[in-house]
Image (cartoon, rainbow, N blue to C red; front, side):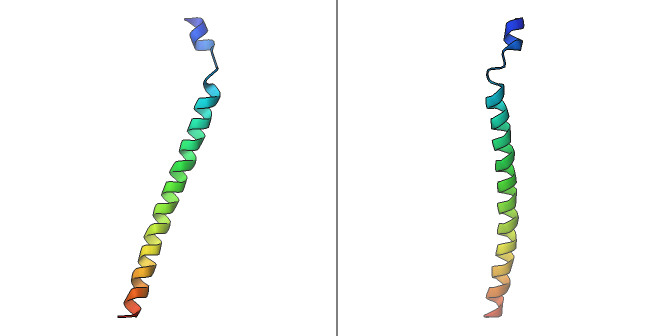
Length: 50
């Protein structure tokens, strides 16, 4: 059982997975924010032509 807990072979893979997950969450959040602002911008721009 002690050998199981001292094995660090998958540690790097888990760390890279966590980093990728964090970056993905930041990108998704940023795109949602930009999408909301872009939608409001185009709505206001289209109202100018009415």
